[in-house]
Amino acid sequence: MNALLIAPAFPNTFWSFIHALKFANKKSLQPPLGLLTVSSLLPPDWERRLVDLSVRKLSDSDIAWADIVFIGAMSIQKDSVLDVIETCRKQEKKIVAGGPLFTASYGEFEGVDHFVLGEAEITLPRFLDDLERGVPEPLYISDERPQLDLTPLPDWDLIRMKDYRDMNIQYSRGCPFACEFCDISVLFGRKVRTKDAGAIIAEMDELYLRGWRGGVFFVDDNFIGNRSKLKRDILPAMIEWQKKHRYPFLLTTETSIDLADDDILMDMMSEAGFQTVFVGVESPNDESLRECNKVQNRGRDLLVSVRRIQKAGFEVHAGFIIGFDSDPPSIFERLSRFIQESGIVTAMVGLLNAPYGTDLYLRLKREGRLLDEISGDNTDLTMNFVPRMNRQTLIEGYRMIIRDIYSIKPYYRRVRRFLRDFDPPKGQASRFRYKDFVALLRSMFGLGLVHRGRREYWKLFTWTLLKRPRLFPSAITMAVYGLHFRKVFEPLLTGNATS
Image 1 (spheres, one colour):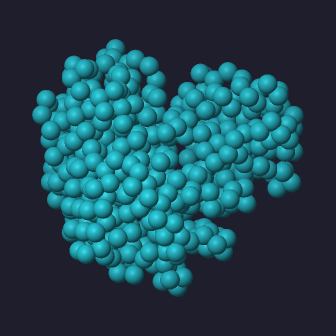
Image 2: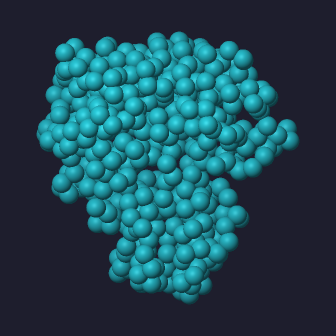
């Protein structure tokens, strides 16, 4: 059996980093870990190919080769998914679909022969058994939550690692919190399930033996959901491995903001090689946090918490949301000021949306305020419900925030604010690798000579070399990111966006 696994394309959005990746000669941010894991769950005698449409085009010969096609996708990939389904149907291929997009809305997709939904460790073996017996069903779904010791190593043979900026590892699924707008508990539950230390080290070994050096993103929705296990087993093993191998991996993950309350945990994560954490800050308005049940963010000085994490040696990326019922008219100015003062360089500000099945979705449905399904891109000026605030006021306020934080001068000012006080662990975050010279030269040409903002680029360039030379690689990376953000938000920055 020839199995073709297709990862639909990601559009040009905030998190695609498409414009930044060009400087590093990379084609995509990360490989499709879900499909690589699915491949390892398929029968060993099957032939496999993977086509990541963010890396290369799908050819007619790819489809002709296949006996069966597997598609895995998230909501933001919907447009590409529809194209893939249509293309495969023209060659009359059997299509199997799974992943968050289909789990939430499989009824919207015609032309798919089999939906294998939920977590693949449970539903995929059932489909494969039925397929072997010649009686596969159209729908496989389960609420069962598998233990992650059922999860095999990803099938890294299917990709060219050099096409990607980062590799990825999953340590846990689930989140102990129940934020109203978040679908993680819907998809994976509130009980945090984890792999053991041996499994994590095996994945790190596999990447290392394949020659990978550089970024590794732990894709957990809340890496610190089970703190005791992290401190007792996982982080000590990772620290020992990184020291033994002289820190070949630069680690990134997502955590809740209460990481700031645990100095020991922050020290251990830093020693393990974590450099960047994404935190859902959401709002500086406590009433909005109460409304969305963001209990871990309430009753604290969020600015102080962010600075504690930064002081521990982490670059903080953060998510913010506009459009809560409790948002006051002052929220736009307050949020802009918070981002600038915090030195959060990568600040993803989005409009509130209600993913299918979330508590927010159910509440808005009861209130008769739901509109369309979500687009998956919360920066595209769409909302799938009727907000309390006047919608035009909300859109104009959102535009104001983007102009305040991603226009050239405010952005570079925020970069310097962060770098001024940042002190990463010596010997880890500050290393400048040979391959980074190519990106540096491209930034000097592109940002220093071609694109707008040249003066600010050279000011940052010289300031960092003179004042914070250890952080020069970070400064150049942030300058490149700034170009990407400006291009993504260009319609909002120039006033040409339509709502």
